[in-house]
Image (cartoon, rainbow, N blue to C red; front, side, top):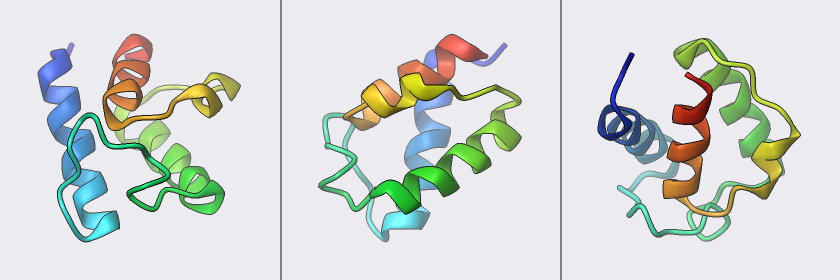
Length: 75
């Protein structure tokens, strides 16, 4: 199983490609440009990439760090 730090790094790398700049863990997903459409794409990509099932709980995620924790908890 990947460590939390590895999960964080993979998510930051993916978001960097999507957003065009490297987000900080404390950045709000909304501020870096993750709207509802981007979240749907992110959900599909993360289910495939991490082999997890994403549920409605992802809607409560607000920051990059919370997203990393959400993904790690499901791995």
